[in-house]
Image: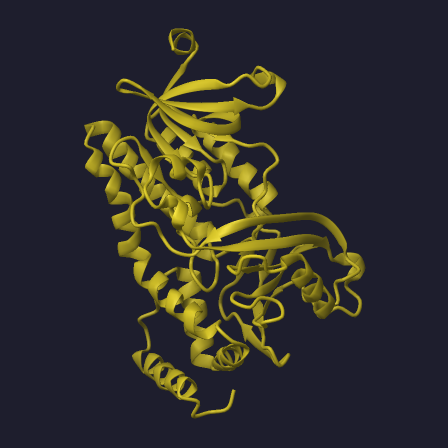
Length: 404
């Protein structure tokens, strides 16, 4: 261990994973005055619809030119092919291309003082009281392929669902329930004619033939679009399902630019830290909204909370400070996750239920409160009479008292 130790780099924090979670955590930690290493694999792009709410744009000072589209409405498609438009009044849904969005966030972290390292995390090791992170560098500028060691005081695992950091350090991290998502980025401009496609509208398909337990999507990205679906059912054919979705949308002939797949967690982990020297954030901590699969906003918010908890830990040495990140997140967003989890369990279980769910989306109160909650990332408490009307309409659908 002596030779390796002599070549070791020392940092306050090593952040593993350079997506929105890791880049945001690294930026905030660097701005707080800590030495930070950000390890990220080159060329890795997560399959993602790319939707972000206006609150994220405001809270995280996102450059306007990163928005490749501003969505003005959604279209919900039922198993019967009924289409329900959901216009957005006084707002929008921003769309980003993760290839460029993530890199912009990584560069911002570097500008704040984080050290970027391109490579693949391999292990957490310990030598007496010292914590070490082993990683495999990529690229000639980082010494070829010889493994390197970094000695941090804290490791932040921001390496996605089924996190390698989490599996090594956090009990239960390997058991988080996941939906496996797959999408294809296609060029839409040459294939627009005859397609059921609008460059300022997100289409969401609630159909068992597209996904038996989730949904399919067609999300515009300017001159391209993300077409994808997901399922928690092992062995379900996601590629054939996307082929069917492209055919329904009239985009079968669109040029495919890239294909990507990855698991998406559907439930926050019970613990984000190991009570010692590791803490998780973002997908690694399971903070993707059930039912919608929305993750970018929650990933970045969790990263800030983890960075704040990490700063408290580094300042005091008190490991109990690490647990405050999860507590803060669940206090702010736990109720929303609970409601969305119930919704997914009930409404996504059959085409009959999906038909009724899409029917409910016709309701103007549902549309208004849904968009208010999405854009502001809080359950809307305004207009209690509207909430009461929605409650009784939901009951009518639950007990089959109305037709879908």
